[in-house]
Amino acid sequence: MASGFSATLPAMKRLEGKTALVTGAASGIGRATSILFAQEGANVVVLDRAPAVEETAAAIRQNGGKAVAFVKDSAEESAIAAAIDAAVREFGALDVCYANAGVSGGLVPLQEQTPEHWAEILKINLIGTFLAVKHSARVMTPRKRGSIICTASVAGLRSGAGGSPYSSSKAGVVSLVQTTAYQLSGSGVRINAICPGLIETGMTRPIFEQARSRGTDHKIGQLNPLRRAGAPVEIAQMALFLASDDASYVNGQAFPVDGGLSSSHPIVPPKM
Image (cartoon, rainbow, N blue to C red; front, side):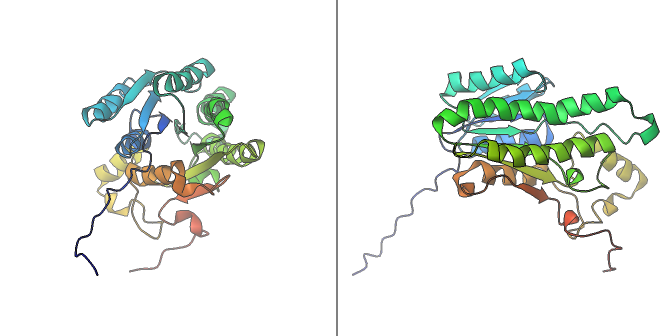
């Protein structure tokens, strides 16, 4: 006989008791992800060369979370190694690493691009990501578990979404994820990439500001089927999935989060 009483257990937070490192955490996708990870129970180490990363950590702590901030360059090996060692020292382990830091490099014409310009973008976007992967794997593999996430881009999948140096660096991130998945075979450590489309962040803000100044902001994102730009939290939600045990069998993949932009060859969108 039914008692008429039903008890609902509180939902378990998806990262409860875990520790995550997020690079490029001073604003945009990195800040949104850091805050979401903390809301889902993670201790968070945030790193960025911009001092505003301290504000990200403060926002987490003000809402009852635990966060440690590093104002350092993620493309410097000593900096990323120190942040990861601090995560282990402060919280006991590193369960999630989100290598998100990156720069766009602008749209420089081919004949005006220099080796120095390429080297700087590759250093931050690709070598910096490699360093995060290397050192997070160093502490994750002995524990036989962990999730590494890298920010790539739809620009790394095909042309038309960024300049040559940027697009090449992000294609390199996709390859890094694919090859590393096999190098970590049997370790229990997963690695995946997120390929954002047009998201309003500090890096893309000039695009949005120019459109608003011209009164054409209603056209932003018109080439994707959702016909809008994305928000940082929409990328953060994908990062949360990949960081969590819900993605326990997801490995070596690059996921576009772009409103459907990369699902098609270029076409003239139909009129509504």
